Length: 403
Image 1 (spheres, rainbow, N blue to C red):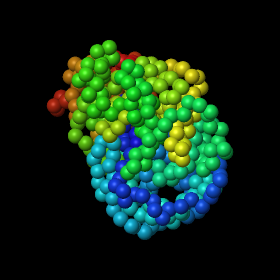
Image 2: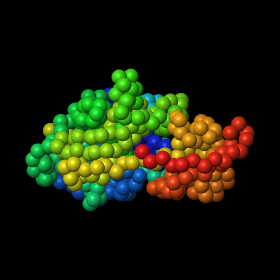
Image 3: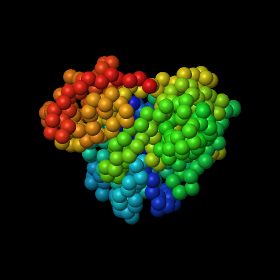
Image 4: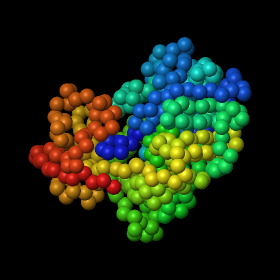
């Protein structure tokens, strides 16, 4: 599945589940035909949470067009579903691990009944995934041959196997390319001033648009960023679904003059930190209009509030990203050339206090509240930071930069 990136200071947690061809759902089936199902959803940190019924009980699953069906280890312990195999789970940081793979006899989405679907068993008990209280993922394997509409103002999704039951736009459709092995839906977008790009539509990511890391590096080599400065972070900016901490690496963000999707245009915003796996359009797009993916006809529709609109995905940077390790908060990534770096902050330093938030007494901190709050570390124009570097305690004040 995909991504949870804090637009201010926190980490991106990858939930993208990529697997080998073992994940084809050969014996799975959907009982209903000629239907239109509406399901209300919760919207938390740019993720879509829908109610899912298993064995008569209702659970909270993340709807992720970039992921496959997954259930928590807690659900597997509860139901002891038949294990049919093990498989590799690969996160957005391209690290992988072997996980159990089970068959779930019946899953209900509203009135729809999906039987004999195979699911990855994944552990969501660790921080910060535990803060989301997700019981699993409803992914692309449920969406094959269906039409999915995402409506944020109404907080509803619509699922149908009949296009006549949905009010699909008469024009402006974008061709969708379905990747053969993973069934990921790719759409072609125009990213000014950089050209056209195939990007996966990933409802497990809260991005509006993000470049693949290698794409930015190639564009930099071609001097495409002379008029468009790139902000570079170095460190760990993502924790993939494998749960393995990756090695520190460079990640980038840059300004986008225009993102064109069919007839709709999004202007003047910053693309999120780059991803190792692929460029993507995420649920950030839902803030500006209704999104529909037609898996039957391989078409993508975006019905914007306005045909041309200024995006508001602006960022505020302290110059670093914190990460809770379970024992302390550390500097997980550092913005190259930032005021924080110039004043002595280094990768891996222990954070003791950020503004009025004391991080010394780990036991007294509500870590989930920090993770889930929109502006976790305060909305001030300046950040006062106390940290431990090479055994010495230091206090600095840095300006928050909007870009």
